[in-house]
Image 1 (cartoon, rainbow, N blue to C red):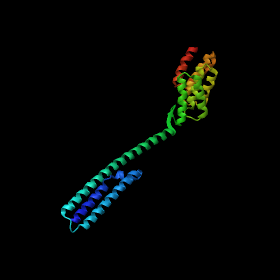
Image 2: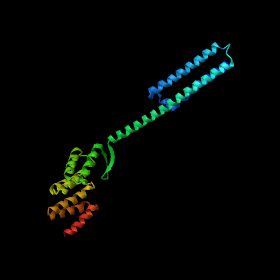
Image 3: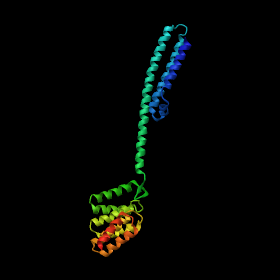
Image 4: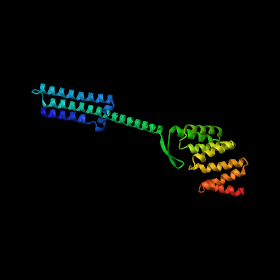
Length: 253
């Protein structure tokens, strides 16, 4: 009878310890408090087994089958209780691991937002810093709101800070438009000429020439306006701006 009971105790002990899933076991060292609690349960189980073994040895010759059955039942109840504690700790560990995973995912997303991003600007791939994007968007928002003076100052600052930006040509173009909106036509011409000179392959270049022609028209300089429109048609004949230039040239005849 005694060997049978001892085998049952050993089996129950191993079952309690193996109840914790492997995934939770892998994360034990991530949570010191849960680790200590599980180690404490292990210690209790070991002490219980030693205690039962000692009692079995002391009462080997005088214990009845009934006594052994009662002791075995008590042991099973205690192991069941400890199993419940292990299950609770396992669940707590799983939740802690999920929270930790969510934290690192959120942290990674935040770090990515702070890193330069590759994007297509005016048909070309460019690497744009978050602060660079924010600055350009803010200047453009001012222009769309009709705050042309502030927009002009913002675009000028953008060009100064990010001369090699993928948005540099667009910023220069919109700077010219802020001058035009304020009827500062000479400044607008200079700003748009910088687009044509420094970014001849940019999609904004034909529009810049069209804007220059408009400035000359406002200044009553018809020959300069006509020459600019002819240059636009000659250099960018396939652009939408060239179609507008042809219409204006026909009207100037």
